[in-house]
Length: 432
Ligand code: HAM
Image (cartoon, rainbow, N blue to C red):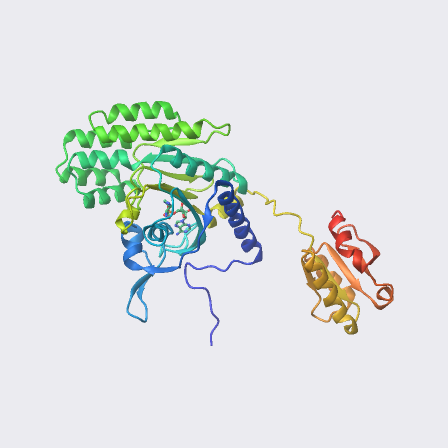
């Protein structure tokens, strides 16, 4: 057989990268704990119909969809939100609200591979089900902020908009949902001219086009000023006016805490996923042009899947892109000074003793690698040094007679004879 490569768009994560991915995942899990989100695990394969329902044209066209051997039309999940909404519409239907659910795992989209865009990628995903209050939207923004901070990201900023403003204007003008979806897709890609042309062709008024044009041009970091201008622009559209008010309330909540979020309001901001009904947002860092996270409010999805009317808001953080951003920012991770230990028997007759000591230390929670290559002590020591092992335990006959071994601190290049029963204590206390 020839030599194999990974399939295009798929990657291997070698230990260093896998460690960073797991580090970010751990921080996401910690964030979930801090905010009371319970972890659930949903399947990678779901019914195509479920995943496609509101994914939007862009994501729908890139789904890994196929018939399984039973003839079912299925797909690899391109996101978590549809799966979580399915659960809340069915199995969790009678759970008291609010429901706070967290998941983490791999997603699949047949995107064109490029920097930060992969066909298999990872998200940590938070959904808050059952509240339509602005404090729920604020919670999703705040937990995203805390998570980004906890992984060590710097200079990240939120781009925030509100699809309720845009869709309510279009609905007021009688523009059908299908057409609205096309308009949102184009606006998501910043193809504003084409988007406005479709609005015009659908019979919307001059005033509507003008209003949308003004919104598209309106963005800024002075949130109070932008909100005021937005309200001014949409005057006469009652539901859109309410949406601007809602955006203001949410922003108010997140601007109050001591750690103020860095926010740009972008009044013409749209996202490709079709289920959004309210606030939408993304997170960016100056080093990358692509979003590190995205989310928003979607009040109709659970009902669409046959559940009770359930207002909801959520976010997904792109773990791969956060890793990329940390690398771009040259952030060194505080991955914790693990005290790795290597146990080396001086000859083969001491192998079982070396294994016994290794197991004893592992039982105390100390990570241990046992020498399994049958190398001489000097060779094994060289290898331990090369791989940054902190402590080496050399198991020799002479010391064993006294129930002891030699413990070597590799950084300090110091060694002493230590009783086996005192080993775990000594290693834990020893500074590196
Ligand atoms: P999304 O914006 O499609 O939203 O994806 C969220 C994040 O996943 C993106 O900001 C990005 O970091 C990461 N991501 C997406 N596609 C790729 C890719 N091809 N390669 C690498 N990373 C990628 C959602 O998925 C919604 N379900 C978020 C949400 C949850 N809305 C409400 N609740």
